Image 1: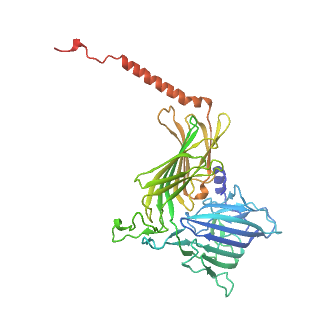
Image 2: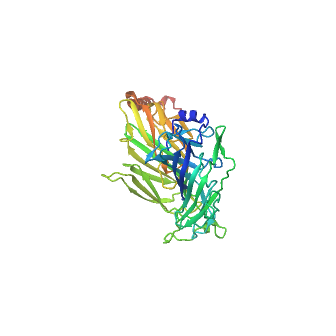
Length: 487
């Protein structure tokens, strides 16, 4: 997903939508939902055609009027295999309703592009509680079925794909805009196909700079019930602490993780939590919906990894460093002593060191630091992420560039031992992160020559004060003289 700077986006958000719905027509729309656990991948292929010559771009709807705030958290638009950069968000309400794709309209030939989305927490367990040996089922729910668009659509097809090649049930598909006598839905194995819908009018319109439902059109909610043979992993809280040392040429990264299995909860037996599990430690069979191990990829050339947790559940690990010639990520595998079942949580800390080579660049006093925002785990949603970057003492003129919108960026000063004025600290907070947010944060700052010596001078002064006080203490006479002793 590509965004403008914060200032530019704020200016665009202050504008109102202004477009001509008669410039474009959707020749064909093909949308596919790849159903999953905590995340759902959505890919929509648009084939559009200009009805008249115009320099006005195509207005793409990101979220319809009925869709809640929690939904699409990541999106991008690609054309010909290339991602559109710095697309213009032009909604006056929340800044994420529509986006303008700068296409020049010419009636000569159709244009094709792809809109990719990731939905978070769009599926929930149904039933909510199951026995230890029972199969897990999820229910995907969406407030819309027809693809939201500001333009008319000739033909539209929607597909839902289950990861287990099986669909248990689904809600009734809308029959409007279906050819008379045709079946509005077809199910084949793990694929449910709706449509094709023909001659679909615009679903939304613009009123006072905001999207509203087009008069006479109503959306039909859609739900799909399907098996899910994997654990539903959610990181409720991720705190990444990054500390940079110029003297040691090192960057230390430490992740504090609260991992929860948000799939179907384990049904209690005999109303006693102690009776929830019934297999011994050496049981050969484990249900597919439990978390038995955690594969944590580390950046290339990471070294000296460590881990610990509060309750001591993680007792086994295996570290595979980067290949000496091919490179690639290092892998840290953690295995809990007790598997994490539905509704259970494990809280642990993972840390490692990395050399500054490849992460820090710059000539003279001007520096550019590259910091990985998070470690992506496939299909895992991070509900709340916080990245804290601590720069060396003496760094000045600190600026931060984040490749996606965040909730807040805070600057502060952190003081620790042997610091004179403290170290600059940056705190970045973001909600609802997915694996696509595994991108780099860039921090630019100046680090003059005297800053390299600041720590050395501080240590020297502290040592001089210590030895001076020690020498004075040695000269003090604390003995009791004999003249003061009472016989």
